[in-house]
Image 1 (tube, rainbow, N blue to C red):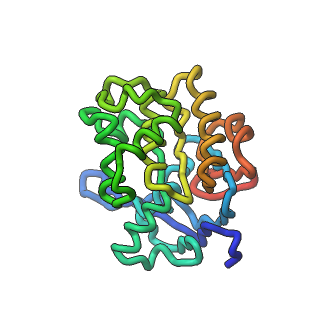
Image 2: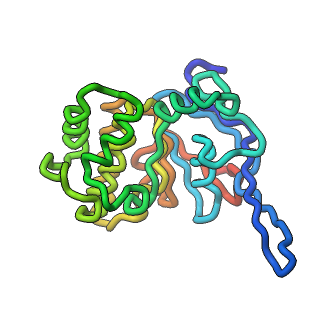
Length: 235
């Protein structure tokens, strides 16, 4: 494997099974079909595709939130599919994801402090979590005054910034942004996109930016690939 490559997928396949019909017949749907790709360190790779094309399933399978049925995930030269429980904990600190809908990804009855401190304390990132949280809020261009506000009191744009801060609080080297603009008002999307561009540089991130919006991808990505019916196709 090339040392410049951070993440490599080889023939990754994900299948969903369901039971339907009067007699409970099991049906299978292949959501990701033998996807192979490589992402270099420091690269922003854009992934575009229509709803239902398999983009989000691919994103979750990279972190094994959805278990692939075939293929390999090579991260920093090691096979993620062979990781032990302890190795997976370390991997999920280095590789983080921000989901599309922050209002469902974050607990609405928790304060910003609780949301940001949970993973920081679990992974023992620092002995001074409040200092890190204040730094994260500053990075996200959020006022320190929101630290004890509940998630349900925040706007959609503020919530998405908190979700991004939660991911960056673990100091990852690889970040997946899965349709993070689509649930936001048009007036907010440009600001979040500009924020992501800055954060990539400031945090030396490798980024997989997933969107159905080619215009957004063109403004942030070094390279764009397309997904259609579970496969990578010419963009």
